[in-house]
Amino acid sequence: MGGDERVYMSKEVNPEGEPNEPLDSVFDHLANAMDGQSPEAFDYRKDLCLILAGKLKDEFGVEGLCQMLSAIDATAGWASDILLESSDIDDVLFREYGIFVENSIGVAQKTTAMKRFHKSLWSSRRRYAKLMAAELFALSQGKK
Image (cartoon, rainbow, N blue to C red; front, top):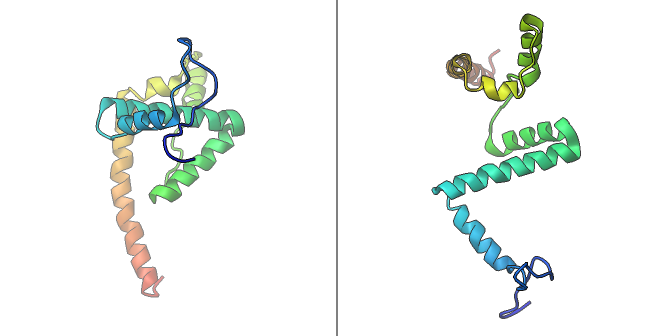
């Protein structure tokens, strides 16, 4: 393609009878939305992540989401783990109280207990990072 040729998302026309928006305009819009600072950029990232996660789950099930978590860990240099699942909360709610709460994990994320859980994890993270670093250093020195 050269010059002023435009690539359209499809050859169909929009309801006003005009051709669909050219791809370069779509990319310009996306670039503006992805500037990283604006509320639109945040909303775009959030929506895109939700769409991608939904497509992964639809196509590959929970296993696909687990593989994506592994890929994210590898890309970001993280070591993530699934620390809590909705079934953990659902089981306790049913066993202890005989109830079911729709989207229990979403509701639980707003509780004081979840805030304490996160705080506990963060303090453990720092403590264990020191222990791991000491062990890695000892291994690098040929010590056990």
